[in-house]
Image 1 (cartoon, rainbow, N blue to C red):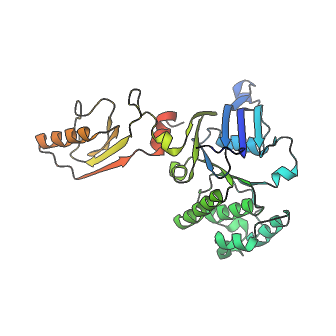
Image 2: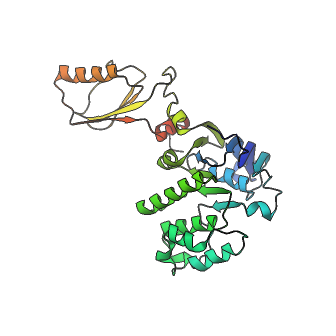
Image 3: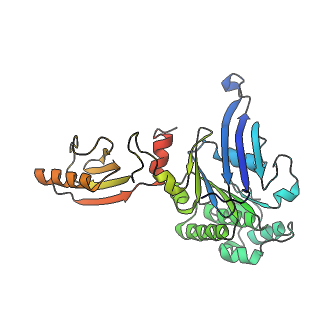
Length: 322
């Protein structure tokens, strides 16, 4: 459910052109086209899309790091293209490339950034919460990818912002660091912070997001809560039934023609490994097991899984490599 309070971010009809590019006969390349979204306080709003879909460009326009070609943006009630330093002090930004000075060491860097704000987050608390003390004497250039991500998140939070932009925040994180970062994001959301998350990792979005926008080729092509998107029709006519996948191992080369409804897609990922995906009913499962019994087939394994956000994303944006 969308909040009745004023959103932290509102974008309407965003257009962003780049160029001119000689390879395109001097024409401008449109990387974002008529994109609209709203991000609320106390929620994680996720922008999902493949690499090059326009996610990073969208949030850089939202932050005022890039000038939009057309459309309107309101960040905490102000236009980021014309607002001054007072707005930037209320916004935390964690970019995908980090943007951290390579020769700096973590603790002096965080203390330096904290000194720029009137009411910063206590640096020692961030160091403890994000485990930065374990690499506090190492320069940025020598940090691992995951360590750099944790430091970048601390730098984004040290100003105690009202809204937080996270661009691929779990990139390079080991499982322990991922759990730590996800726990902190959830805590910040529960404290009322508005968080805008861009990622191409569907598991991250499914776990963290309150509301999701799927972006493809610069357009937003679907939106909703995770639960709403999981009800997205797999094929026309499949209705709003819950989609599941039946996974099983059996002898290779089985022909399922006529065994299951046409709306249920059956594929053999590798020899003897099958996935039947669709609005499966108890009658469909009975039909499969009866078909096996009639032919003396005993599957070596069998499981039933709910449809994932990745399935929805691939159905909407396509399964071809871009």
